[in-house]
Amino acid sequence: MRSKFFLAAAIGTATFIAALGFQYIGGLPPCQLCISQRWALGVGIAGAAIAGMTNGMTRLVFGLVAVGGFLAEAGLAFYHTGVERHWWQGPQSCSGGAQLPSSFDPAVVAAGAAGKAPAACNEIPWDLFGLSMANYNVAIAGFMAALCIMALRAKPAG
Image 1 (cartoon, rainbow, N blue to C red):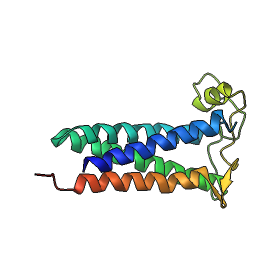
Image 2: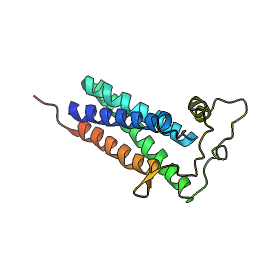
Image 3: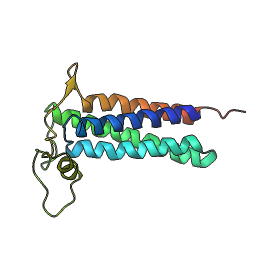
Image 4: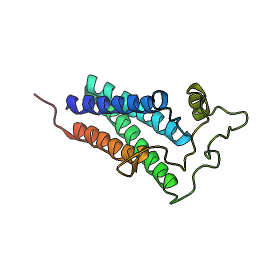
């Protein structure tokens, strides 16, 4: 049971490190939707790690937090996929390079740290086998959520 939570947290951490690698080593600044996915991923990772270290009601609560975080990431990644594929329109402020006046925009901050303008949400800056990072995030986040659900459903040992 614990191992599934820890596996989900480890996969999530590797996913987050890969995103930072694409940003800082690969030179691909994130867009606003990418940043939103990272926040949801962070919630899922933290929830899974804490659920793996605890028992009883605490495990249940943080296991549900993990599932919620990973499902939120999957949902945001699916939405991002639709924006990239022009199935629907994305946020008006996510057209690349635009800064929202008098607001904190994490994509602008992250892109500025990489020395680039924020990426447009409706463009695919990188793909592998015709799938973008958002496409892969849908599957990976769904898998992490499934691991946490299996851990929550497992009977306690002993």
